[in-house]
Image (cartoon, rainbow, N blue to C red):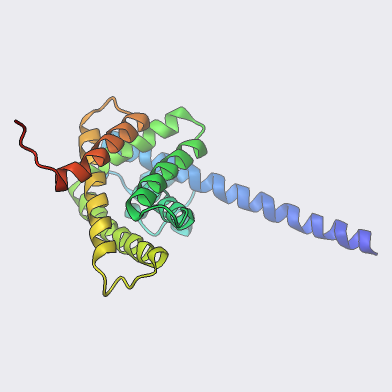
Length: 222
């Protein structure tokens, strides 16, 4: 009796696992097709019809995975942002807030790079970041999403430090400074068409190293 129940449970679980893998493959195929179209012919010129045609699925299937074109354009960025927040929650309480954010973003990039085994797909995702910076409609959405991310990060910093984010301005100030450096390095990196993820990491580390001296040190030299 027990064995039959166990076997039945395994039989029931197998199709569910297959369905989930099939859903993941469909989502990845839609994402890959969309990013390829966006980066070759432009975001504004690409339609949902072209994306679903490339994958040979229906529009209904597309909207089962993505709310609209903007959602699929930011799918990779959303994954990085979500991973950053997860990493930030897991940083040791002994780390100062700024160091915690710095290590969290580095771990988030490492995780995303590890998840993408296909070098061509990684390059495609890198090109997508540049496309967002050069597309007015997406840039506006990017700024809006960044503000939301900053609010979540500030709330997390306040929670880990045991302070009230509404009463104490330090979490928002720290996150604003950190986010500003991230935005700057993203722009500078985007201008280097041959730069990959490692170059982005190096530029970010270098600019974060200069944040403290830029704010507090005397710039004049004898």
